[in-house]
Length: 348
Image 1 (tube, rainbow, N blue to C red):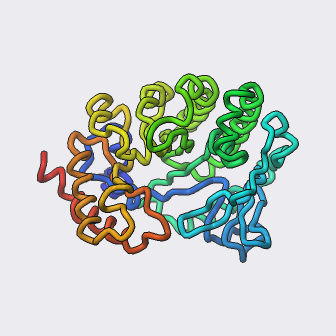
Image 2 (image 1 turned 45 degrees about the horizontal axis):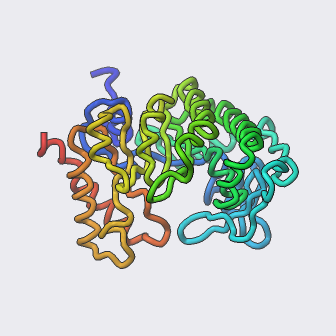
């Protein structure tokens, strides 16, 4: 029929985000191309002036001569087998009241970035009919802990809340501008606001501090995402389930990586499709442990889908796997693709 959309992994995934019934259980890794607007990885970017480097920041920051990446704030990170991590001992912010002097400020001028060329280079690798574009914007708490270290960042929240607010306001102004400037070129279906405000046991801070010092900036970015026409998703690792009512009120439609330290079944029962779960696989469970057998990994995938797929509102994702888990990634991907495609046919 004319005008019908072919049901691909992309469109099946987007149906779930819209609160609709999926044709099959989506696998985030298959349905989406995840992209960070402030960094393009392992790609030659036309117009970047640095085609031979592995990572080029759109604001012009590049690898330094020690093989470490410097972001727009001046934070140095080292690429490891598990991803990019802030370089130990390289905290640039020692006094939050002096943040303008200690981080790279003013921030680079986004108006000078050739987003059209970056988008063209990126989309040469992605089939938009098959993949949803999901891009991730790190938010304020990430910037604070990466600048100061966790302990000093938490002290700053309590001891210098006004200086923290000033820093967060500038960061959010910049993130908002980046979203507005990049959206016309990339038109992502989903924009993820990333802030790991929790440990595996609880939030890093009292809920009151989150509500007063961090939530306003998450809300502002969620509003921008909605205004632009994308679906807002929250990225928060750890045990953060007590924030879900706030996130729903902010307009977030989904949450990743939805780790099992939270009561995921209870969350689904309470909120239904008001908060779509993206993830669910237990990186600390029998399948996620170092040296886990192939059968243990495959069984853990099936158990995750059995537990969380009923009632829809779920996207499978083995979001904790990294460069050190190449073989394990192949097992989770293969088992998920074998099991998820017929799950709803067999169980509904």
